[in-house]
Length: 115
Image 1 (cartoon, helix red, strand yellow):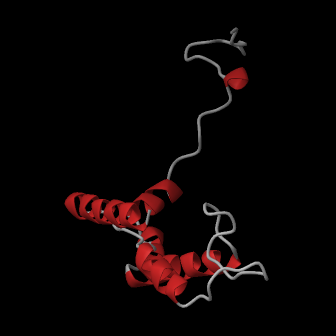
Image 2 (cartoon, rainbow, N blue to C red):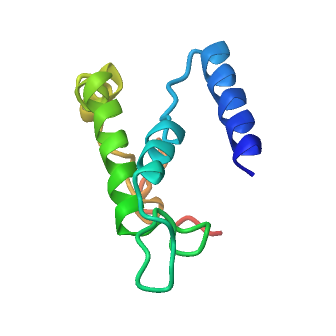
């Protein structure tokens, strides 16, 4: 299973590099953490996964640390806050009036739109 996951991780890394995308590599820190955990036994084992698919609190912590590291190293939040799209969106004009208040040009009075 780990060999399959390592192959998948390498394919993900290659795809991200090919397309210029960032990759949040959790494989390396998860395997490093798992190597330092005591063997699983029946007395409250410490693990990264609660059932093999869902993370435990420890797994969540390792994932959070890696996500925070990537966000900080790449200055992702700062870049998003400085984005011209955000500035453009903040300057957008008010939306058009609601259809029930719409009065066509050249109309002499209020008309109701029928749907």
